[in-house]
Image 1: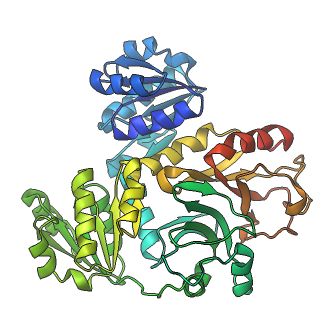
Image 2: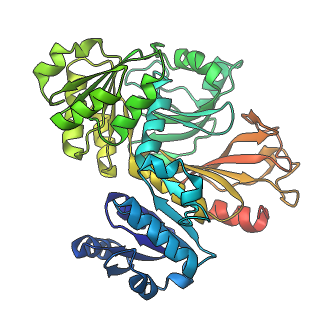
Image 3: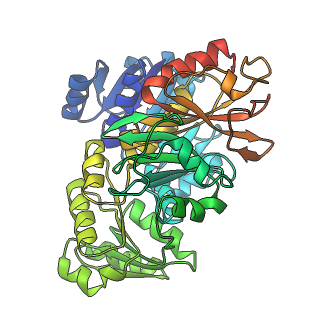
Length: 455
């Protein structure tokens, strides 16, 4: 697959790395030669310096032979024009554009075939805000994502000294037989594994499990967490994801929201537009400000500042000063284990979420969705559509040989979600959610695309 990536900033470089790891033929375009040099040093790719909306440069990149164009510069206009040129030169290619302006996102005619020809618009800040909103609904989770109607994938960190230490996953299931829960992944000391029934649980493990929203309180009790729904929310940073999150949350009567913004002009603008949010002009790293604003009474503190290092400091400081739960944003994927080990409750990466949107379109087989999860997106939830010709159809799951590191975590059948057991079967037309480690994905793709003939 030949992919042209326009924009070598944080999002573009992350997508470049992900696609280079998928053995794609990647060409990166950017105005800044230094950023391109860094990409060349890390990955074996071609780079071109210049504007991604320049028809001559796109011709030099052989846009006519591209299978996908991903335009993720900081300019909506450049991204959309690049897609418009690509529509003329490579009408067969998938065209993805990063679009921040919500007026564009709301107008399908402008973005679509009759306009700029954008097949898929991505907004990492919007996706990030939605992911945080999901995390807020599950008070003990390190991460939350939808995996079909009526099912959630939740991250659970096992505290040191937990009475569950030493228990096997088979024993765990027997403790609440009335609750359908399937642990899909275990991360221990940075190593990821799809556990079997005889694998054990230890303090410090991060588990990812599939369960139903109505069972979350009982899941919390199983893992010995208190169920404390969030009411008082403080957001540090009012640009990007922080602003979008405040707008989303203020629509609900569930939350009392404070937003701390260090820039005076932005704080004033936010105060005028956010009717049900208390906007404070100040530095979120200021301990005196946090103490004055009763940080100890805060149910959830969300560090959403743009600068990665400042954001980490803000999150750690809020936790030290007594915030009950702290969520931090970071695009430094190497920071995530460090931040979590320092006591931050959940870490969200806009870059990792954006990568998931792109991977959806390069995975082999009839793929319906791709959801990266785990430390630095080490694992993926991938939904395939099952066809009549599949060798897996009509057989108990325990009789089907799937790659090591992959597990069927959910079946979506006629709009209803099923957490399967070994005796359940895949039927034609099911959407099958696999949860897989990165190392297992190529084998899973080959299995789905060739042996099981999903596509």
